[in-house]
Image (tube, rainbow, N blue to C red; front, side):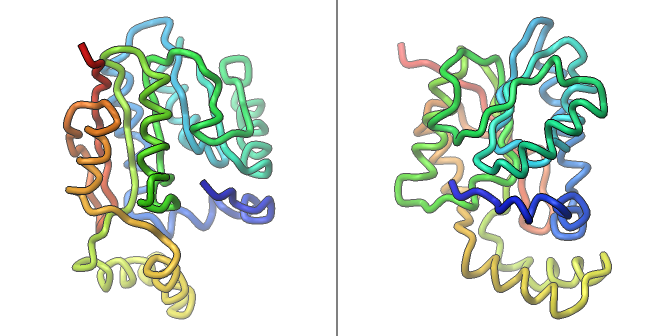
Length: 223
């Protein structure tokens, strides 16, 4: 997984909401799903925590849970740690500069990975990522994934949505160029195969928006 530059973290929060349809709604739904499925005393792994916006939603929905938040970008982690102190939940989160395969080897009760998989090639990297997460989850633990899928039918609509959010045409076109050239989006069918091969039940869709998709899958163990 490639890391964002430290400079990218500076204005990430302002940029992302105009580039990811349903960004806030996806966070809220993910937090609600985990809150509904987890009990007290749980430990959640947040993979690719970015600037900590996902964490803010999670700590509000799970007031007694603890979290391990990992990201390969030092700049993103610094922003996330600042927010944790600002919002008063720093004592509930352990921050680690790491990828999924380097994550602390503990047993977690759930995991969230938002806007991560499309940065990984489907040459074994996606599978290794999902297997690394699965190996750290207990039986029945939910994994929530939010990621853009290969949805070419919506690409023109996606571009128009970004323009409607205030992006200049040139900026929207730049995003679309990176989507097509630099992202490694899996189809929904391929994502389902990858998730089940990693040791999860078939993923269930809870969110879609112009090609972005949120799914939840339960960890299972081989008998």
